[in-house]
Image 1: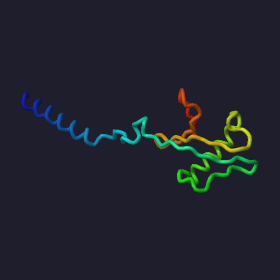
Image 2: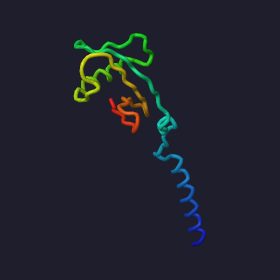
Image 3: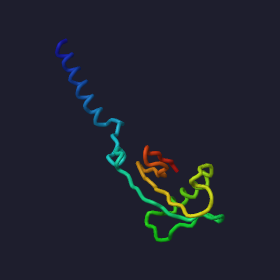
Image 4: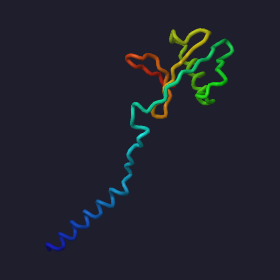
Length: 113
């Protein structure tokens, strides 16, 4: 009886070790876990009645980011800083694969777009 119990406990410990290797839990990569892992850049554009005009030689801009900025400027018409026509500079922060607009520096306030 004692040897049967010992063999059963041995099988449970072995099975538990294999189960941990095949676990569904996958730890996050280092690129998603850090607050300091961020890109930070400024985008300058002109807003008119006809839409937004971006600088053509800005390497940080792609079509997806331009579309997000256009939607952001259209959506935030209630914020005083983004109303009217003229030249605007947005500080864009990319953290954890998401883009944010830096609304305030201290205390930090980010607006997702």
